[in-house]
Length: 92
Image (cartoon, rainbow, N blue to C red):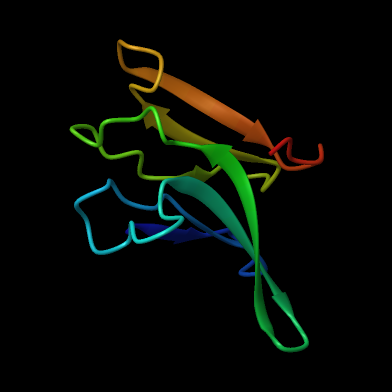
């Protein structure tokens, strides 16, 4: 549903949508990293948000150095701020 771009303009990220949102059909409940490739954007799932209830918007943001994606979620109960290290391969 919401997207952001790294400062250098080379990476994009999106936060998906809940089960009743337009972004949800099939696989929308993920934080995705989008990397430009020869045939268009390559989508890499980073964080499973299936336990997030979307009463809180994740709203992904890149850190200024482009190394991390930061977002908020209530996937473990209370709202927390999470960070994904883009230098590490995702665990899906």
